[in-house]
Each structure stands twice: as structure tokens, then as C-alpha cells.
Length: 544
Image (cartoon, rainbow, N blue to C red; front, side, top):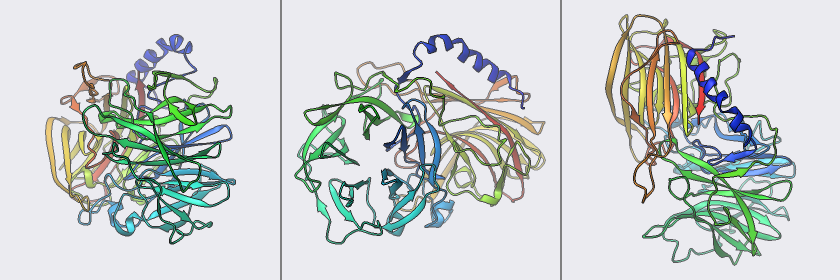
């Protein structure tokens, strides 16, 4: 068993000091329900278990499936696919492009007659954007492809009581599918409603349910203009083909951040309903809120009695085991934990958990110019209100030109990099960014600004990254941005931590990565392949 460092012990003491106070409220869910990047949610219940899917775009494996029995404790239990292989872009091509901010979007999850179904459409043009339909006997997988068909934007799969199957997508468009889900039924395209005059922005994120014989289509409305806000709307009809009427079911800011957006509703075994809606929170990404949902005059109304996202919601059951979607890892397993995702498709031969048991080995596999084209960067979400993660890295097998380290990884990144130059090792804290072409997301105009560097005299290093995503103090009249601050440290013995570089303001850029900050562990070659690093552990704590 590996020894805990002073940092781990100190953080554990901080947590234990608050246990008594927390125990009084252990059966409450604090909003955000998941204070991490979990956008475009779809959620269903099968028996006593809730299953949630989210968008992870260019990360692999993709379309994570998370499970909970109490809506408080969530854990990643599987992925719908390991890789996408329609184009070299999924492999980080320097010439053809990348899939940063594209890939898998807004998966629709359903359960029908004993099987799980997932429908997703990559946000791409041409054949790369063709819709996938997957099925599985268990939410954990394995999932298999049923069919590929035309692109459907932000779509919802829907099985009706008569076994007819539909896909609702875009802004009120619908097509019927063949019963075997092999393709659409030609001639069934229908515009089921026309947007009203007040729907001046985007209207998307379709989620369809049937309740008491009526059809409900939930969508996000990006209303623009003075006094207008993002909101969740619902279209209701007695017949799936219409006519539909509309109602606003949630229009609420929360926690000093902007108005919440897209999501869906789900019922419990006892017949209660909840709304799961994401909220943009700057650098950490799009987080999930939970609110009660009440049926009033046949409409699902999300929020507390004032129609707002509440600060806290009672969990369904007490005594559920504590789980999380972000985890520490000692790399003692022969399989990579489901809490990890690679940046684009990994090069499978260039990483190992078995060549040196208890360590993650990251090998260089091709020469690349920078971090943004580096294969096998391993990521996990960062979390609010604060989080701290560190790695222990063995540098003894790096080659000249190799770069390895830990990053607050995004289109603009704060990075701790160990660089091998000849026989010398240098640790740098830098700010890095990349531009991407609009059409193919080709990485270009890479920038690196070194803030501080030190020479290393040893082959073992501890690298630490702390993130602070609390609401910033400031203007009380408008929305307060998050602090979104990353702070970097290193240690030569795992006990004495030294700050390096400057605090780094993390951001969220929908035009490039469209993703919240990630911990990124990396190793790449700029001159020749063949080197590797061994990562001893990833220690992690969420800071409240």
C-alpha cells in the first residue's frame, strides 16, 4: 500500500473536521447536484436505479453512463462506445484536423422492453455526422451498434405505447423510424410545431416523455433581448403529431451564475418527479442542478414554490454508499478506471497498467509539436467549489525532446511541464493556447508563455494542481463570474510543496473545446519516440 503524503493527510483532516456537521444533513443534495462538466443530460429510471448520459465530445471512451439510486451519489458505470473511427480526425491529425468540441453530442437514452437504447449524432458534416443507434442489455454495456442514419441535431428517441418509434430533433422536427431501428421511414418527416414570435434564439435540446396519455417535449429556449433569459420550455399534445401548445416550465438563475438551461425530468418509484437541468458556470463547465418537479394543470413545473432552483433538495434514500464521478487512482488495477477519458482516440500500444504493476506507463508514440496534438493525454473532470489533484511521476526513461506533466487542460491551458533537453530536466509552469480552423478543427497558431522554470536534479517529481470555482466576489447587480483559478505546485519529496508560476484564470470557450476544465496527464515526444514516464498515483480531493 502506498504511503499517503502530508497533503493527503491534511486534506483528510479538513474533511473529518466537518463530518459531525455534515452528518446532520447527510440526506440532502446540495445544488449543483454535480458541480462538474456534465452537459446535455438525459436521465431515465429503470427500477430503483437512475441512469444519466452526458456529452463528452472529443474524449474517449465516449457517451458516459452514470448511475445513482438516490440522485445524490453518482458513479460512471460504462460508456456507450470506446472509440469513433469515421475519420483520422478522431486520432488527432495534424493535417486533416481534430474533433475538438465536436464528436458525440446530446445522447438520448431510453429503456424499452428489457433493453437499453442510445441515440447520438456527432456534431459533424457529412458521413461523420451520421446518427448512431446503440443497444445493450445492461446500462453498463457492452453496447452494440444497431444502425447509422442521417444526422439528427440534439435529438430524442421515443418509443410509443403502440411500439412505433420516433426521433424528435432540431426545432420541432420529427421522423418515424422502422421498428427494427434500421432507418427512417421515408415520407414521415413532419414539423410538429412552429416557433412562436418570442422564441427568437436557439430552441433545441429535445427530450420527450409521455405522461398520463399526453406527449411532452422539453427544450431549452435561448431567448435574447432586454429582460429575456434562457429558459426551459415544454410543448404538450394529446397526439404525438400535434397540435402542440407551449408553456415555460423553468426560468431561474442560481447561485450567482446565469440562468439554467437544458435538461429533462424523471420520476421516482414513489411517483415524485425531479428536473435535472444544466447551468453554465464558466471554467468548470456546465454543471447539473436538481429541482422538484410538480404537475400543475397538466404541465411539469420545475423548481421550488417560487419557480426557482433550490439550494438543497432531499435525497431519495439515506444509507446509500458514497460514490463520485471524479476519483483518486493508485493505478493498481489492470484495467483503466471508468473515471478516466483520453483526449481523442488513444494509441493503445502506447500506454500500460501491467508493464510496471501499480503504475500508469505513458509512452511516446509519434512526434508532435505541442500538447494539443499529443496522443494519450489522460483526463478527468475538475470539480467545484474546489478541487486538488496531484500526480507522482518517474522521469527516468524520458528521451531528449520529451514533454510530460499535468495540465488544467482546455483550449487555453495552465500547464506544468517537465522537458527533457539533452540530459537535463526542466520543470516549467506555462500558459498555453491553441486556435482551431472552423471547418476541420485543424490545430494552428499554438502559443506557449513560460511563467517560471526550474532545473530538476532528480527523476521523481510530485506535481499538483488546485482549482477554485466558487462565485467571485464583486458586482452584486449582475451575475458574478466564477473565480476559475488554478494554482500550481511541485514537490521533490511529497511533503514540502512549493508554488510555481502564477495563478491561472481558467475559461470556457464554446467555439473551440466547448468543455469545462480537465485534469490532464500527458507525455509526448517532440524529437524522437521511445521514451516513457511512469505515473505512480493520482491523488484527489474535492474541497468544499
